[in-house]
Image 1 (tube, rainbow, N blue to C red):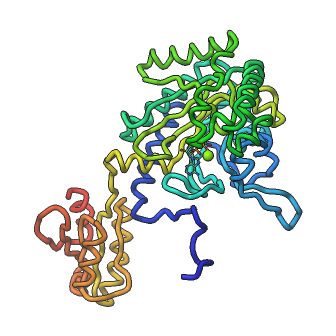
Image 2 (cartoon, rainbow, N blue to C red; image 1 turned 180 degrees about the vertical axis):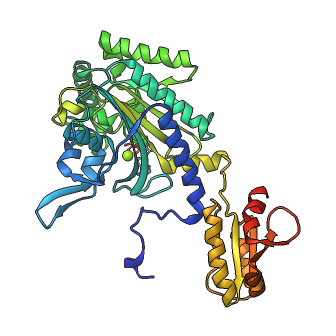
Image 3 (spheres, rainbow, N blue to C red; image 1 turned 135 degrees about the vertical axis):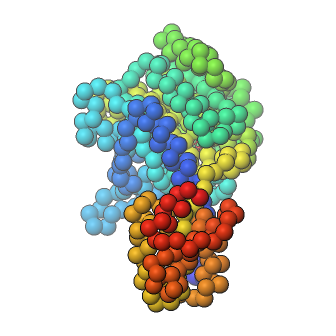
Length: 421
Ligand code: ATP
Ligand code: MG
């Protein structure tokens, strides 16, 4: 196949064989969100580039090198395929005045785009489910989100596969103090800094802590900790979050090196990680971003949220052996002959009226080849219609999965037979 007829590298088709897994995941997620009173928000996949630059931060991996940005030639605007969902959520909340009567609990689900090196668990189009609680300052919402995570992993069959790491980034002042100490520390070890870190030393030294370069891990481990700079209020907030987790019996580890790849976070940050997916082990990440709404032009509004990577969670469900409910066809309608084809069409519609899932064989072919298709379809029953049956207004019902004899019955009685079997 010529290159132009292939999908874009790192962007995947969801094939029919994967459908049951995706649908099960999405159904569980929707019920889970409803159980906590979250409301869905859908935003466009394209936004003005300025939104992401302002929200995520100019000196971040995403903005520096991962965004699909282009100029709309019709009007010269710079647009970007969304690399994450929080910026759009906050933009939409401000623009539509969603916060006029107080806090809002929102969720979104959909594709995100980042120009990364494709590998297992890392794609250029991937999917996230995210939640955002806008207008809530207290640690109760941070705790709610962590409890939500724990409950969802259980519902997805992943309890025991993911662990929680948390940290606090403190407020602006503690970050400024820490930033100064970090710069001094890294200046003193300048020779050990890689190119990215050199570049970020004065623009965004906190980001250096997030490096994935193995050669820098020791240096980063020994760096001054933000944790040691927390003011009393940040400390109280963080203690309350930990208390909430302990009360709920959720195990966690405080990881003072956890900083997250986006600039908008303050106070609580966390990641749910697994060791069963190789290098791409973070399945969900989030935290508090009290400054973002104001930063994007809204009234100062505290907020927090998280986003999970759907592909990584699906891979983990498969790895963990989560049972996937199949949703088989009730019937596959085999029809041989012209009168049979006409009657089969009506019969299939009648059964669908009764709520059954029915595939009607198309394209003709011998009885034998149609029966093969019926078997391969996964349907519970083959409904066999020849001209003979058509004439009599009857259907031969053959169980394909459970045992049992083939029976010929009036069309009116097929529904009952299928619902029983
Ligand atoms: P990573 O450190 O793996 O690059 P990140 O910090 O860039 O992740 P976030 O922006 O926090 O990721 O996104 C939340 C979640 O979305 C991640 O924890 C991960 O599960 C998923 N995710 C992020 N980028 C990708 C990608 N390119 N492909 C697949 N999933 C991704
Ligand atoms: Mg990333």
